[in-house]
Image 1 (cartoon, helix red, strand yellow):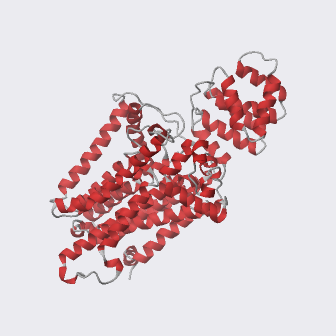
Image 2 (cartoon, one colour):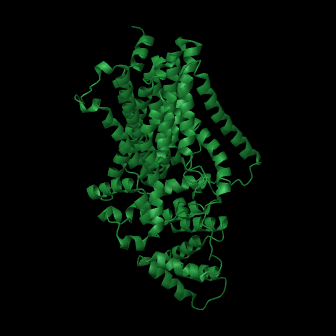
Image 3 (tube, helix red, strand yellow):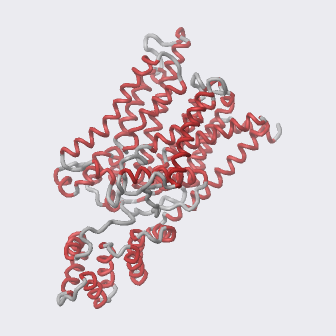
Length: 565
């Protein structure tokens, strides 16, 4: 057997595929197990009372209404965080093991889902079906190794994104399993188990109930699960045939799960614990219209990052667009309309041409549909975040890989193996980039130094880097970063407050007093006393109280616009 034959045999070996997916994922994230808690994890994880006693008590509600609402809306994810805490408290290794396990299981689901899709009535007759395992392998490998997934996997709190994606994928896969069993039973009624006997896994109802439960879990993990029932309906329409009414009947219970998220939000509003505006989290958001216009351009950035993942950033300094006729916005909108139109054309052409075109179309629909919640009309605190691509990347990769392999087979079947080798080289390149990207997450200093380098005009990252320097005892560097933060936004109240405390702790009491007087913009005879009082409160663990007093006294930061993060 020659080398080419051996490669073709290996490319069709399913157990080797599963092993390769797991090995690549483990290697890419092998340097993440000691990454510390970062950024807002101090609030959502380290100081979250729910993780310690699993109680949604009135005291919790009164202490932090937003965090209470966050836990209620994303209950499943926080239950899993609570299990981590009960097992090993705040030892980060356990949290990272769970995060990576979720990522690996999602990658395996991607593989199995693509493989199962080629067994549907529509795709089983496609020309590319003979290479179904290769399409599934390439898709899963690119998914597991892509550097854009690092934020959802390495950043512990963004487990919410990867866990929601896992349930999202699981619900679709279980639905396909159910649908395929019912289809096979219809095609071969004599061999079906009419009396309900036989193995449990062979009973269609088990798979359908599993899909329903997975959908419910996804809805209680993150809000972008709202689109999962719609994607299942699209899948049904794309890959199965039959009487439409009967097919819709089985979709109704799945569609009903879409009521969970709005019902939860209305309940929280009634409790006065959260509102629709708080779904945007903390920070500066933009008007809904401007947010939507900006998202047309953001989606273009997402496409570029998926194809060429360079200059990744935890905190993008992204411009806000306010006119549809801005050339960048208009061009982006036209691109997206063309992409969606192409999806429609591919479905139409698949009626008379290769049915594989329908899978490309489905991948395009998946990409845009799964981004519609976070890139829609509800303005979020950050207009762009890499973790939001975790789930949409599946559809994007499916479309790209299916199209590439179909092209190879159409040009010349002899090009298939060299083409797959090229895809594997890309996987290795992405994997190496992801491994390197994970080194940025190794500590607060490396993370925020990277952000400051790429987004120097944002005041938020400077203050976060300054805090990291303070924790290392590098007072001079911390003061410099606070000053850079104020240069970026002179009205950044938190930066001035932290600067005063930092100067005091560094031994420059006179400088701290002068900074306080400058903040008040007037000479104060009791400035030293006020500084002593503020610093004392900070050292007593009452920093929020001290900051509230400083903010109240400062005439220029009463409506301080939060910047950066």
